[in-house]
Length: 199
Length: 199
Image (cartoon, rainbow over all chains, first blue to last red; front, side):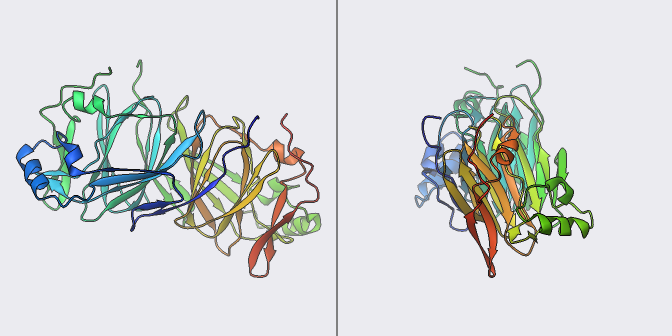
């Protein structure tokens, strides 16, 4: 080995503060970044007009090294809310290297991971404190906050995975929508979905 | 893609029960498997003579797929105790593909991750509920239970990583020992350690 290995990192994913102490990266998504994500455009425009400018969700990460075998670890924090009858959600992605898997471990709140294969399967899996979702490769996936509090998850994926967000936009959204159903949630088909196509 | 992707898996790492609900693999290590791990051979023999036959530590895993990009997720559970002045510990390993990283996230108990590079660095990092250690590639690492309760951690690493345990045995043990120090712990040099050598 020609160089010293990267130093080990002690991390504290702080769900209440929405912070990954010890991490080295962060990005935020605001309501204004999410045009086209929700089907109810009038509700989206109304929410945007009333928006106080705080992020809808953000991600903090630890990537102390790159290359084969490296992992990115992080915390994802998603505020509660709805636009029309759809719950707040992340944009969702397929990994650019589509065979890269991912682990999500629930820290706080009440969420649903929506997972769809390119060839027609759709799964909605609940995630919350103390439960995890092991996402194999080749699944388009998104987090949805179906509770009243922030949804915070710890995640881990190969650092070279990358994110393809456009595959969802090209398909007219994910196959199913996660919507309010009384005090709970359910899924229904997205009538705009036209099937997933790789580039 | 010629075949359907592996199905997503919902996991419940249950620290109290020491179980990964939803997992698909398990192994156990008993005191009798750990000859040579502790420096105090008389204390080891006495512990073995009094041993009730329960495992010292065990690991339950989820590996729903193999190949590039796949992850193994699991729970590691290590009983509390000492042999001489050394705390109960896992054998420790370098990944067989040495550049493979690993995440450990503390679920219960009070532990130390002992991490050593092949070229002489040694680190001891505390881990407990809500804290994590992000282990980059090329670090020999072991978990040590420095508390009075079971140490349970959630872990995640590339499924092709593999484990090389022999590198520690060939070196006469890890460079440092994690030992009792009053009510706490400290590390001291292992006089038997002869340096790490790959095969």
